[in-house]
Amino acid sequence: MPAGTTPARRRRIRLVAFTGGAAALGFGGLYVTGLLVSGADVPDGTRVRGVDIGGLSRSQAEEKLDQELGKTWASPLKVRIGDRSATVDARAAGLRLDSEATVARAVQPRSGPLTAIGRLFSSGKRDIEPVTGMDQAKARAVLAKTAKEYDRTAREGAVTFHGGKPVVVQPRSGQSLDVDRSLAALDSADPSLRSDPVRLPVRQSRPRVDAAEVNRAMKEFATPAMSAPVTLTTGGRRIEIGPVTVGNHLTMKPDKSNRLAPRLDGQGLRDDPTVVNALGPATGKAVEARLGLDGERVVVASDGKPGQRVTSKAIQQAVLPLLTKTGTARTGAVAAETVQPTLTRDTVGPLGIKEKMSTFTVNFEPAPYRTKNIGRAAELLNGSLVRPGENWSFNRTVGERTKANGFVDGIIINNNQFEKAAGGGVSAVATTVFNALFFAGVKPLEHGAHSFYIERYPEGREATVVWGSLDLRFANDSGNAIYIQASATDTSITVTFLGTKKYDAVEAVTGPRTEVKEPSSRPGAEKDCLPQTPLEGFNVAVDRVFTSDGKEVKRETFNTHYAPRDEVTCDAEPVDPR
Figure 1 (spheres, rainbow, N blue to C red):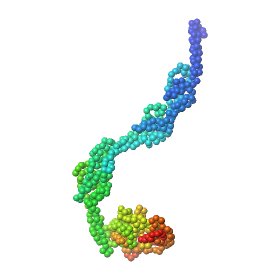
Figure 2 (cartoon, rainbow, N blue to C red):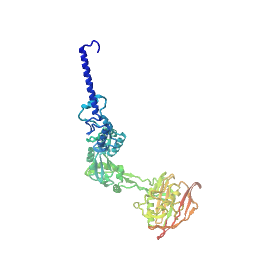
Figure 3 (cartoon, one colour):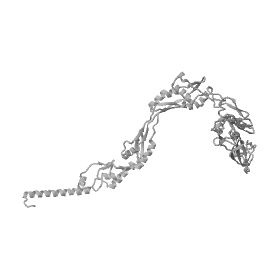
Figure 4 (cartoon, rainbow, N blue to C red):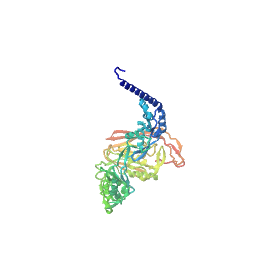
């Protein structure tokens, strides 16, 4: 002890030393005891969502959590998408229990003697929140798939018309899953908590036309519109149009203020067969002048006459205001306008139609189907007016060769053999037109010969037509209008072009047959066999020679290939291909 220490002070120092040594000895014992009793990593009483992992080592605790709690992450996760319930595959979305991190959260660190001693005096239960994880890429993919199934577009309120009745389309809100915000909701989800579904954020879209507007449109327009027919008056006649017909061409569309406004398709209503038939007696098409010849000069056989027409705009303006009225107020006048013919006595001269440009006749053996079809085609062709620079089409002018268009079944050539089809014999008309345009000197745009040669047609100067695949077309490059005359008898068809000649003369020079190929013979089909006589195949070239002032000014060559016409034998008599 230091010198000068009194006996009392020495007694106090010894007492303190003794007391400190005893405390140190007791603390050390508690520390050792704490270490001995805390050999487990997880304190007693530790639970995770009701799973007791107290007293277990880290690995044991992780394994127990995986077995008893981890399976809840493999179950479907209930979610709420707007007003719809759904489930999400938690495992597919990459949601998982991180058992290692959860156990690490539960374990108290061994940082010193105080921790070990504290375990001796700890008691009771400890609830630990689980640590979870999520694979962002997998979750985004699952949400995108879910959005496709549960998203819906907004449906506008609307009123339609069917069968003469108004039909309501109720509006509906739309929703789309907000994938980015839903990722955060999934990331914070805990599948082990079986409570309310996870709410996934959505974006709402509301219809512009709501239920109130639909109800207004029904009351103020749609219901009155279909309540009764409307009646139009024109030319001293009354034309009744029923709700079914009106409704077929009536719609209601939202305007700029999202009010449903009626729209009537005047063109569709004007062209509706019921309206066309009703308007027919009250109106009439303009009648074009009919032209004839006095020698080589054009004369007017009958003058044109004006017609009356109700336009689509006029019928739309007349009908729409009547739809909301009742009783006799649903009757109104519709304006008709005068339609002048294109061709009249006064316009023939300015159009340049003054002389015969060309004419051609094809003779054929009489047959009921030929007479019918050729006569019908001539009727449809006659009076055609082709202005300068316009292109003319046989198929467009004559139309499809159907029974509805006035044609009957006959014999045609298809795939180098005869067969029955509508419009048989019309190729005689096409051949006649081709020769008329050939000698008129105008420009052919499209034409095609028969696959094999037919004796009564000029070789290399004939044509056939097939609806939808082969047409006969020419361009009027004569500088003046062309008027087409067509007439038929039981045995002939004649086509004449009237206009102004561009050349003094147009002639045909036919070359020799080349690459001649003999036909073969084959039996016909067992059913509906059509026999045919044999004829050689060959190539031929025809020059079109243009002459003015006694000199050749241009020459064009038309090359044609004909396949052999095989002999087809069957019990029936051979078919005349003409």
